Length: 364
Image 1 (cartoon, rainbow, N blue to C red):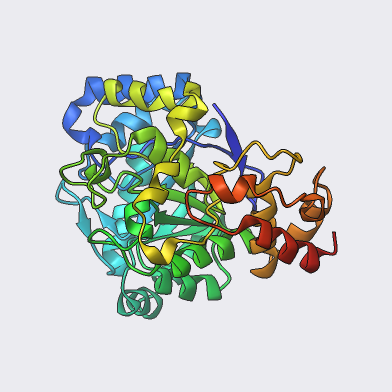
Image 2: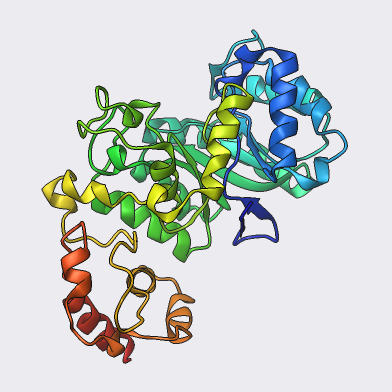
């Protein structure tokens, strides 16, 4: 397992986490076996936006002895009083639901307390006016909540909450279909969504990824908005390559699903390569570096994707990006203008031109 550090903390988070949206149907025995397998394989990040109440007591029992080694995302707005998932912005209901979740999980703290599923500005205003954020911040002061997060599909809402300066983690839907205007939750254009990812990294806000497979649509040519199927491993790598991303949280139904997804860790670069996107992404995605590194290897030894990433992050306001760039072994000024990267780039980026631009910006 690989781990990435939470910028606003010391936690190291597994790049593959566990979503719980579908596992409740598996039954108590299979839920526990799946969780135990995840723990054995180094998974330490668990999202608790479940479709029903079933996983909570099973998780609590399975993790009783390792609670200090795992991280929970608990959603303030997900309500399980009736046994099935319900969405609410009512503070009193949220308080009762969170108390129940803490008891079921057998824990006295929440690693990440989330403003849950805010996709409209009006919903955000409701939780602000209704005292939900104040309540999470109160629990944070008391030590019950360690970090504050937000789950959303809407760049504008995420930007508004980032403006408040309270976030340590954003749960956001990232996949090629959504980034390139396809799907029910495909809110915001490619530039707007990439700007959000860059802002998160620049401000030290981590991203946990939901809907990496677009609810399975991307995995089947019959339902893929591109008319061509992608693989789970391509989708996972695509999300992990986006700025700010710490972990991808695919929902699993059982151990078979989890075992298949964990195969990503041993997958070859060819199995993870998503450069095929360049052949069917829309025209407005053309010319934008997505850091896929399909242009590698560079004859002059440049890490073209990383050079582009530090440039974009520096322009987005990341104070550390310039220093990271300075410590690269090769810089944009070392480009020999051979055109190898231009010919290989699936997104038709003028990389040799970008290297000149980046050299001027950084001075090397």
